[in-house]
Amino acid sequence: MTVYHAGDYRKHSRRGGHRGGNGGRNNRNGLDRNGHVSLGPWNPLCALAGILAVLAGCATAARAIAPARMPEALANIPVNTLIILTVALAVVTLILVIVARLRARRAGVGHGLASTWGIIALVLALMLAGCGWAANTLFPEGVVEEKVADAAPTSTPTAMQKDVDNAFGTCTSGWQGMDASSYPGVTSIQMCTDTRVVYAVFDNSSSVGIYKAPIASKASEILAQYQDQAGSAQYAMLTGQQWILVGERSGIENLQKTWGGTISNIN
Image (cartoon, rainbow, N blue to C red; front, side, top):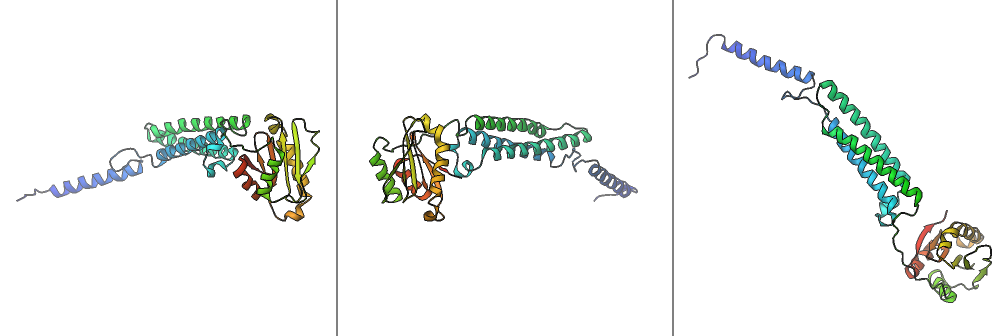
């Protein structure tokens, strides 16, 4: 049987009140109920923002270096967009690091590993973004290019025209040769007005890169004359090692199954 002495209840009550009073002061001083300093969610947010910034930086560098090997969803995002995203996340990380460190300083404690990781992460993210920018500037098509199949019979004009007819439809009006003398390195330029197709064959692979843009522009200009026949059809370009073909996208996609090559849009 427990025996209580006079005044025990009052002492016990005062102790309880004293502990309760400390708990209230701890909350007001930024301490948790165990008496430890509470820095709120800032440190975890620093770590999370830093991780996101690094992931965005990795995506930027990978997209710029090897675009052909990226998933379709990522390959369709421009490198500059990924750079902006990485920089934005790095700025957010920096802001969170500053807030976390200011709060830690006011509480008189160390800033913790999370904010340190945030600084390391934002530096790493900016380095990756810079790497992506440099790679995209120097190598717009990517540093690592995927090997593309190329089965176009460039040495046999009749075979090329037959394959094009199979993909776009028979050229009933006949293929028309165009003057290629103003394009050194170009072997021939052929056009079909019925199916609205123009293709050029080169004598070396380096000429493709040189004349790709001007030939695409010229082909678009010529094909625009027959836009009434095409209706709302969309044009695209199919490029191989020593040839370029411009035509309606549906036919381009059919021909790619036979010849290979790389499809690109025409503005």
